[in-house]
Length: 47
Image (cartoon, rainbow, N blue to C red; front, top):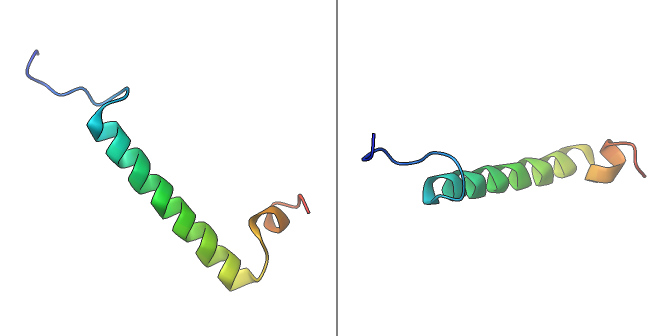
């Protein structure tokens, strides 16, 4: 059990996945804006 890497918390593994998913979300948000012609807030009905 001692030689297994932790998968939760502030570990390098978790931070790498957090960064990758954040980049993916940003790209999807920009692509959606380009395809619809509306900003994110307009799509959510906040503006």
